[in-house]
Length: 501
Image (cartoon, rainbow, N blue to C red; front, top):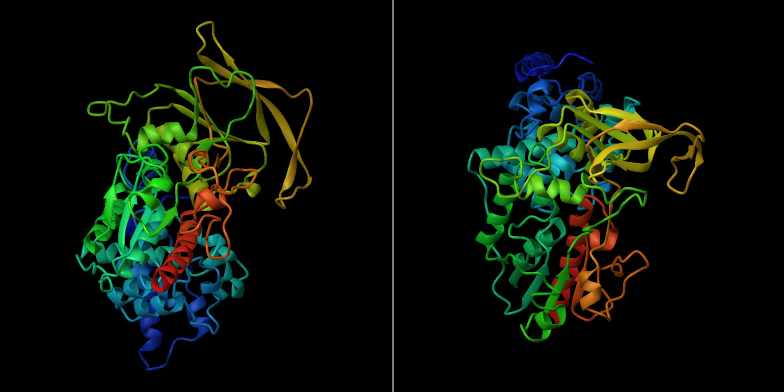
C-alpha cells in the first residue's frame, strides 16, 4: 500500500506546482498545452485510513484552494468541449473551470448551477471517470483516463466554497402561474424536477414516504461519503424558493396518484420513487438471522442512525465477521459501513475480478485502504446456520472468467468441486434493486416493462395524461446524475405542457 499523504503534504506539492506555473507566466506568455499537461493530477486529501475506518466522518476532505487552482490549470480549454458530452445534465464544464483559473469561485459555481442545482452532491458521488472525464482531451493526450482533469473534484470544491463562505444565492422563481405540480419522491430526480418547475413559477409539492427528505442520498449513501448536512442544505434552498415538502406521505397508500391529480387538483405529477425492491441470491439459508439486504443494512445506519447506540432507537445487529456480496458502489458502502459498525473482519465477495467491478475505482481503493478483504472469483452457494437459526457461515464456490456476456464483461464460470466455507456471523446482499412496485399496484393503468420499470417516451412522459416519471423507477438502479438528467428532461416537458395548458 502506498504512503497515505496528509492534506499538508498534498498542499505543499500543489504549492510547488503553482510556483512553477506562475514562473512560466511571469514573462507574460500564456501557458501552453504542454505546460498544462506537465502538471500531474492533484490527489484528493483524505482522512487517515486506520482512524476513519471506525468513524462516520467524511473520508474525502476536498481540495485546498491551491490544489483547485492547480488542477484547473491542467484544463487546456480545447475546442468542442468533449467533456460536456459526457455529462447527463450538460454542465458547461470548460466555462466553470475557466472561472476557477481566474480565481472566481462564485462565478464557477453559478455557471454549474445553470444546469445542475446539486453540485456539492454530484461532486462527491457521480462516476465522473465514466462520464465527463472519460471524454477529457487531457486524459486522451496522456493516454491515461486517470490523468484526465478532475472535473468532479473541482465541482465539489466550488460548491463547498460557496457553502462555507455563505455565498449561496437562491434562484428567483418566475411569476406565479397558478399551476400545481406534484413530485413523488425527494431523491435526485424529484429534487431536480421540483427546482426546475418551481423556477418556472409553478406551485410545487414534494411527497416523501420517509420522515426525512433526500431519497437514496439519505437512506442509501453513507455519511462518510455524502454528509447528510449537504443534502439537507439543498432541500432548504428549495424551500426558500417556495417548494413545499410533505414527509411520511406514501403515495399509493396515503393517497393514490389518481387522487392527487383529480381530488387535490394537481395539474401535473412526476413519479421519482426509485428502485427500492432489493434483489436476493435465491440460495439456501437466505432467511437465516444475520442475512440482510443492503437496503435494510444501510437504511438502519444511514437514515435511522443505528450506529449511535446511545441515542438511536433502531437496534443494531452486532457482528464481528461480515461478508458483503456484490461489486458495485452499494457493496462498497455496505462493506465500509460494516467496519464502522464494529466488525473486526469484513469480506467483499465478488464472482469476477477487480477489473470487472462496476464500483467507482476511488471507492474500491478506499475500501482496500480501510482493510476490507476482497474475495474475487468466488460466489456463495448456501448460507449455513446454527440450531437457533443464526448465520454462522457461507459456502463459497470458486469461479474463472469465460467469454464476454451481454454486458461486455467476461462471464464468470463455476469450477466444480471447489466448495469451501467462510466463517461469518452477518451477510449483506448488495446485488442491486428492482423498481418499487407500489405505483403500479395502485395505478393499474400505468404501463411498466417486465422488470417493473415505468415506460416513458423521450420526454419522460408515461402513458397516463399529466404524469411523467424518471430516475431509478425508469432506469432501474442507476446513478444520481443520470436520475437528475431524467428529471431535467421531465421538468422541461412539464413546463412546456403547463405553458400551453
